[in-house]
Image (cartoon, rainbow, N blue to C red; front, side):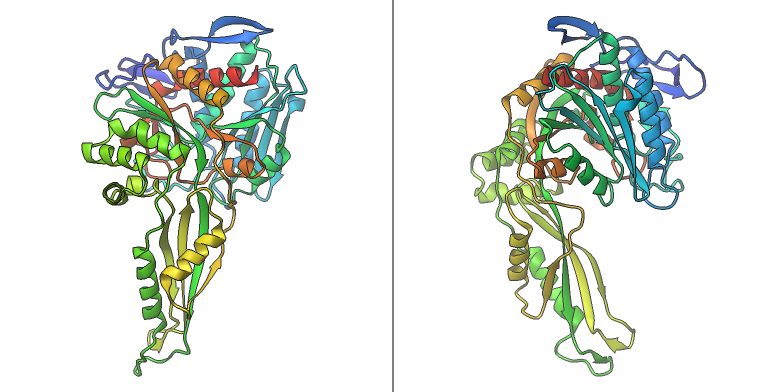
Length: 494
């Protein structure tokens, strides 16, 4: 458990940058980690509406303790992968919280594992609600960090460690929210399934297996990442941008070959020169800017928190995606260029076989994030046309990805998300967004199961270090996050 050493350590929905920092040490049992939120969660039990405190200090304490243990397990792909141990840790927590051992299954899979736990509903005719997460994390080198990334640490109000944001803390919050609901006596009509994949950061194979097993689900709530944004200056929550779709991940291999020869006898055609020209033409090619309901909602919703020029460009693009002035402004900003359409960029290049020989073969990898609705084959053809080199071959070498359309903006889901967020942050804007990365949601969408990214954590953009150094998440976000998940679950399972 974590014991407060100094500062005001109360957990409050109002995250105030002016409050003194909270520093904890991991030493004593039964530590008091924060005062009760004072936010009641309304939900139905056996058909009756009533209120119960869910995000109290005991739940916060339990979530942080579980996250601390999970972070300490090095669930990184490769030798010594401890993802199976994380699965066992989560299984033990669920059983201790009231889940039947027979309803929790851990399945080993090629050096990793995945977990599926079921909470039966009272109406078996209803399709289940799925809560989705993953247990693996990306590599982190202790010598690069300010502290050991696989030893959880709370400092100045932040939980630090690999997985603090992506996504062991989210996992712990989701588990604790379900446990709190069970202990409060909640009886879902719709079965609830919580599942954790074991290789989302690499091959994503277990995510595909899980989605196949749960292809009959009603919907998925994916708690991966952090969907809430805290204002950089005030330290208070600004908005919550849930995601109902994501761009398709794709890799294309470009190859240029040449007979080569002696380096003392240069020739007009050089494979490296040819590839360089091809890549420059691809770099200068612009895919058609476009919108869908999700990205339009994001541009209109988030514009007020951006600079005047960016905000104006967002609004103009949302109204007319062919607006050249808006496209130019948004394309120049790395934070927005990926939001206005398909993007492709070279990520690897390899060529030549000797210092004193002309290159015979040059390869390059072009990584694309494809706007929903476009098959990978169509983007391959666009790249071929952009390169304009009949001597270059291009092949789709994508692994662990599938093309999927965006999920529908279901009214019940939108209402549930707004209700959950406004239950702890009444004045926070809530709107949809389109994800730029890839997640396990794509596997569910490929089966026609709607999936929505709804991580309940709030964080400053400047504090977001997912996949990077010194990953951290504000502890003050944990209590409200538990309430958000619990409200979502009750609204969508009763």
